[in-house]
Length: 183
Image 1 (cartoon, rainbow, N blue to C red):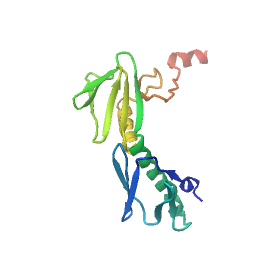
Image 2: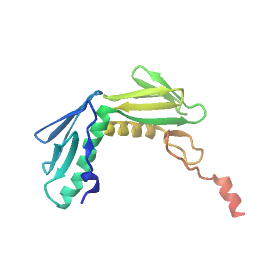
Image 3: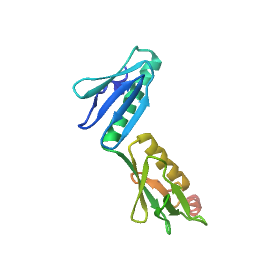
Image 4: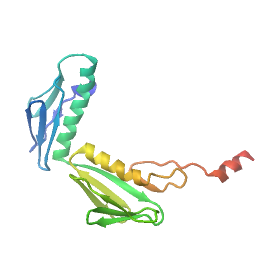
């Protein structure tokens, strides 16, 4: 039994949904999102709560049940509250500033790095070392934040680079510290 799939999805005020040909469309104050679900998954509404069900207990249907429920819940959250991820840029001389097409970052390379925001994503610069990735599509926000982080991932020795604001980077001791332990 899918424990995630059994959880109901409350519909906040101002959020409407519709279903046509296996496609679920959710509309809210921030925008509209749609996802196509497998034919074995059905969604119904009871008292402003969405309930996701599957047609049988086959392994594949159980797998899709939790996934489908999570996709619909993410859409409801996205169109009602929005989604955001915060990235910190850590390092001496590392900084970020707004650019006409997105953001421009100085990350220790010989050139500035310009990152263009994809459609549906807003990049907001806070100070000179913090970027917020905002939008309504949780998958797109997560992918964009991961692409930004991959430009200069956190270094395991000095700790500098681009990291999520809640990420803890454990630094390793350098060669000198390891040599001191052997003596």
